[in-house]
Image (cartoon, rainbow, N blue to C red):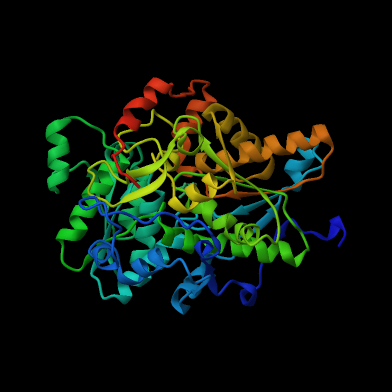
Length: 458
Ligand SMILES: *Cc1c(COP(=O)(O)O)cnc(C)c1O
């Protein structure tokens, strides 16, 4: 098919939309290591996990054999309200860069929550409702996950309790109000509503909180309140499974036009959007059917893949959650100020960590001023105001396209544009005022985090 026939936006018909999620673990020879019980250091059983998470989600978490899992009709219906997400050919950006590369991006910002997180939120709320629960608890850092979950819970008429990192609660009042509009209760964390919160406040009065601390509070409330479970918006296998909708739609759209990507790029916080985007392509790679260059992009200030250790670690600060084997900076690592809140997590999905360790993908870290330069360039030429997190992928996509300009290679580049940045204008303001700083931790800065790693002989 000639170049001219490829439209600016490749949409799918409703009938072409995926009806199953793809479970990449089924095709992995080296499976991701199991979650461990923090008390016994033995693999978590379904029963133990069921005290914290919804039953069916526990099954998905532990399922490493079924390649495909049906998407329930109710979730398919909800997906149809805001999906398929467009796959956009960035003709204007290509022209501006003067590159022979062909650039495509999958845009996940077309829903009120403003990011891909709704894809998993709606699934998790559905299974909670199906189990007959009253509600769910969760944490939110920058606020995207809390917003997505509050939308999903209101749709299924479930109660939603969000623990929001205190500094974000204060700095992002509008995020908070969106959640409250959808009926969620939002508590700044650490709070006096939990034992762990009281303990943290007594030890660190005046603390502005952290994601790891908010997780500990949300888990405590879930396990101590009848009819409630805890849900998480990234990192877990089940979340990568739900997010595979991104990659499956992308693959169907590309296949329609006979396009085969050379490079696939995504930003990586806990790994869910990247894991979802790459999954069907990674599947082909694992089965030896095709080869792709896959690049994870993370902030230089929170470099879990590029500088972390592949080890068992706690997922939270309070050390109440199961241990996961992952690339991590240590649960005691506190990232310095960075405006991509969704990428400020000390660890990484254990599935992606295993794939990275086995050499199936690479990772790069980028500094935030370079990220915002790319964001600004993209906004001015492609129109969309990108989230700071997403702009990490834009940075590397532009870098790769500029390399093609030098070599004359006509590579096809696909990247994930995970969301919009309307709630991140304080960050854009800093950039526009020329006062944004780059923070790169020294090895000495990373040491306390590594020292906090539990000694696990596995
Ligand atoms: C949360 C978030 C991310 C990072 O999370 P992953 O689980 O790594 O995908 C990236 N972009 C946006 C817009 C987000 O909200």
